[in-house]
Length: 425
Image (cartoon, rainbow, N blue to C red):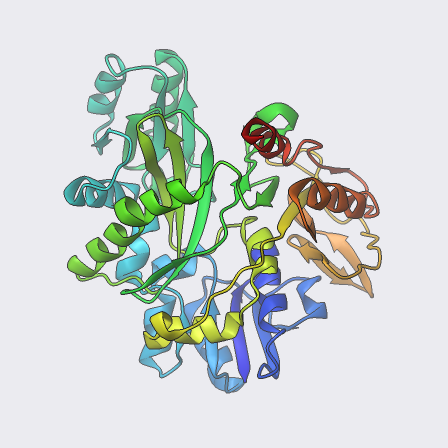
């Protein structure tokens, strides 16, 4: 089979590597791909949001299946366009991808169907939003309604911060048109859990839970990023909590989307907070998370291609989805200055990897046979081990063998997870 994967980051690299484990896969094309992905796929360049280019690539390469991985092309309707031309896809159609594309939509969906989430108000009028933050409980959370590269959420401790957040989004267009509408919601407390799930619109199969680390610096300090590292499984996510989530969140969400005439097929990401009142939804994503994918897929023992085909055909209930009982850790190496200004173009030196190790390239370009940095998050060093301490140690050992100028990483990825394990004993 010939597969086209839309996207060009670490998540897509992880997807491609896992797809290639299936012997039926003859060639993988990546649009646009990147300099590191080029070792595992034919990179076509261009833009992941270019729907005509994706159609042209699918046709000219006679691909059998397309995986649309990033949020932007999904929200724009790339799956709709490809399926209309006869190309089966993994990923939701436009009317289902709105679950991530509009926070106001997703919050209203949860309210309508009784899915537990933070209380909230939605605003399109600046003055009304500013008036609300003068009386709402603190801390409060201000969210841009639309897509914002995972950065459109501001936690405000004071009313001044809340006013600034609202003004920066609605008036200053900090996140462009994504902030024309804002959602202001209750600040929840408790451990965070990411749960990716396969769903064909009827059946939902959760994957191994994971724990992301969003802040740029150790001790959860610094600015929010796209993610500085992950571990899986998340020790806070017990079998009891898993059962609660299936009953009160996962199945109700899939059923709600179907009832709204928006059946969701693909990977639905549940961002959860385990509050004193039980699990609640912080956010939905309409695709694999990044960098959660980099620790979840290495633990998948079943064929990713087989599962994706089943999701596309609506036969997920009859398909095996099996995960290892081992643990995984991924440490992100980023360019100094990320998520703000940073320099590019530094040569990357990569070590040889061994079994249960992977290096996923996110922001790099190939030039004259050399791999050069070309992004904020440059790559992820991932390792699998029998237990979480072992996975963390192996991941950092691998990360320390990778070199490029201006590199930095958090040195405490997985520390909270280890603390949770200790508390269980």
